[in-house]
Length: 95
Image 1: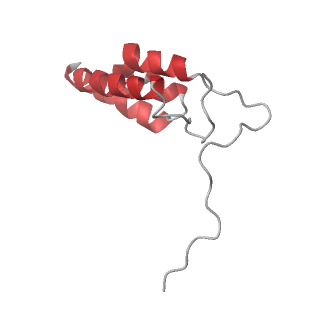
Image 2: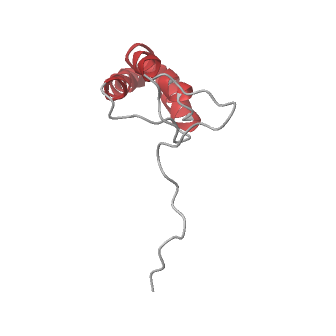
């Protein structure tokens, strides 16, 4: 028998006190310019994703960096046009 969860966290929560919102524009620019190294992922708090992008770029002697850069450009465009609007903690990005 299926029992639905009693609590589901909501995406896009307000930041807790002492936590600053990340900039959507900065994250988008990081993705477009430095996406091969996962800088935009680190900036948004997606540490494991950023580490994976960084390691793929370095461990493939730069060949994987091409694919990671394309991934970064796509993420950067999604960030700039608003399709990605929260960071890893679910906090809305500021404009």
